Image 1 (tube, helix red, strand yellow):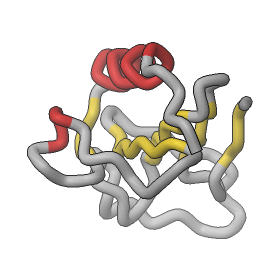
Image 2 (cartoon, rainbow, N blue to C red):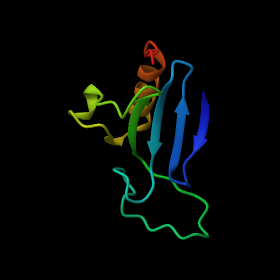
Image 3 (cartoon, one colour):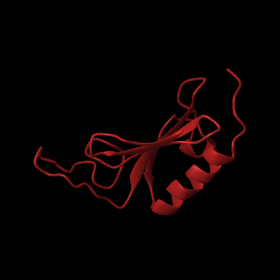
Image 4 (cartoon, one colour):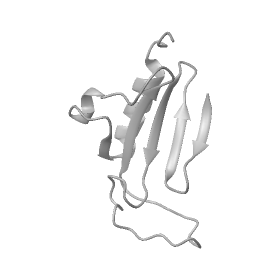
Length: 96
């Protein structure tokens, strides 16, 4: 359970129920700055939207209903991300 950064592209949050939400907003992610070029010297990254994914400790990526049958969601606003975080945090743990 906790927080993890992901190579200046975003972060992961893992809840006590075993669900992890990935929020990515760097180049090559499905987000507003998808085409942005980042140099190694650049230590900041920002954008208006993000790519998201969810998984539990018991398995692969989850095809969330809001992802239109896919395992990742693209172009999520901050409000959309908050909604997904609340959804993941409210899930019952999956038995291993």
